[in-house]
Image (cartoon, rainbow, N blue to C red):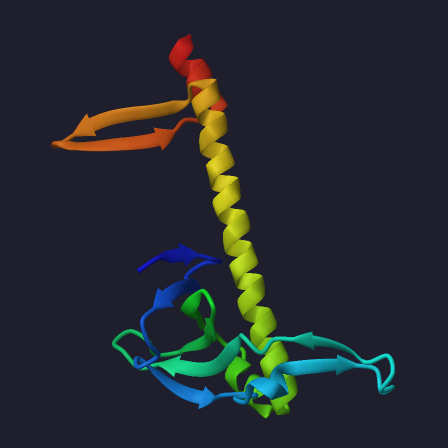
Length: 162
């Protein structure tokens, strides 16, 4: 199971199935409905297809899932779940009140934005470690039979060197 932190405690996880979730809405369950047409003219009809991306809005059912909402995505890359706390905002009520096409579009956009943020965070963290390696700021220590690794700040490096 691969997990990545997005913002705070939000997580996109790869899952085997959606059994742990109570499905609240399954907008556009028919693949043909997930083809969006721009324009009214039959001659210049441009379409965008999301037929391969099945989105569901759900609530996790396990221990510790109270107050959480999930957007479930099933596509060629497998099944994924984005879980997040609703906090004080009525996200579920607002999302479920939308018409089906808008529900799908907004749930899809939230999922894709979270995925993009996670990718950016991974890239930034990789760059931070690469820069620290080049600058010689990666420190290792042992304590109680365990090894700890951290990145020291430039100021900490300067103090260590003086």
